[in-house]
Length: 563
Image 1: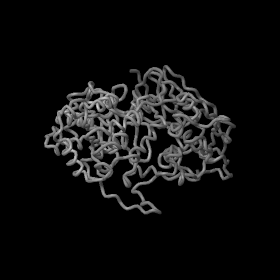
Image 2: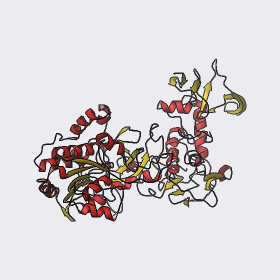
Image 3: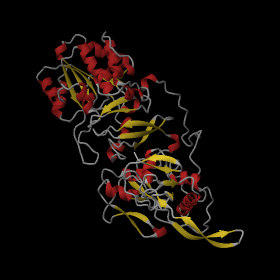
Image 4: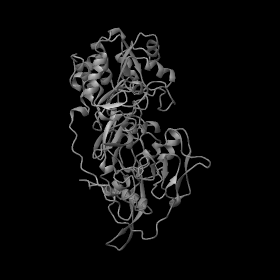
């Protein structure tokens, strides 16, 4: 692979790479605002300027300028290199590039920072971007000088509602045009544009339109400052209080890689952000997927039930074992769930084997909207995983037919969701002698269940999900188990024990050891994850004042002085 030198270090690149892209691939950041790995490069922010040293294959361009000479007390003519934007200048073999080691580059960065902050409002204390804002970061790294302009800054529209999901603050905008390019190049809906010139620039929505569709959250995600905010997260949390877990979106079979940001003090999830993965979702997520974090708390099953009565988990397990104890094996069916992890499904399948269950079925959410960008019609995160574990499994419709025909009278089901909601389906479910459901969320199966066992959600335990490309992806635990919920693989073990059967697994590592033998997934993929929530004792959470939260040990970077 060809290489070039960046500040004396060899950097490999692929043909067509820009300097900044090749550096980013090696984990080297060249400061930038407008450049984004998934978008075109307009080179309009000028923050990524670099110096090119003259070589045998490269001629450096020089500029004639005047410079103040303190000894002469006058200006004198000098030459300096013409800096080039690293986001547009192609990487060339054997070229020499100076970034952090060039005084001209450092001066240019400081000047760009000062220009961008001339009219920037002092919104840091109330801005949702505070703590992860490039203006703050780069001011600390590349400027650190007080504001010299004493004139009244230019004022622009604030809190402009762009649509159902996004709010725009023109005063904070640095006109990087990332949001405009995203809507044009990725979402294929060029509804945003830029108007006016100079310090009157602002982003606007096309007349007669609003910012809407399935990818509006991405305009906020690509914004490097606090100009665009989502109504969902706006003023909800401070990012320095949040921790992040590497998870997999549960919205559809695409299996977008994501960061689930949560507050460990309150054990509550606050947002989803895309996690870059070129093979799956590149840099993006859809709006529906980014909102699935709400399911970590909404519609949950967190207590055991017998009928409609909440009971302790031990009582529910005892009742389930009593109801299933003397049933003919051929009358018992096991339903797997495309909504649950590979580990959960494996354990429930093994429970069925221990019970001698006659048939396996599969259920999950029904089909929905799809596009050719990211969104899949299959609204389950693990359909391929269920097919991998139980290729012979029958459909939910076949389960209903077998119930009506009397071939199935007792069912153990994983997950509460079904592909459809039909009054006739409820009638068929009501014909069952016993329906035991291990579920994290309410659905048609939990409503009809005789016994419900509370399972943890994807956010509360580590699990593996197989997406539509049949890629095995591991999702980390973020939250501690809510209520009496436990991982479904553990509930399956407890139910087996209650019935006097000996399960072959005790811990998550036992489940994964068996899965490794069955699935085309490496041992390393199973090991590089957070431990299951059931194996961790949650820390005692400090009491929160309703008027003033406790001060964190750390804090956000200080706001740019006078910015």
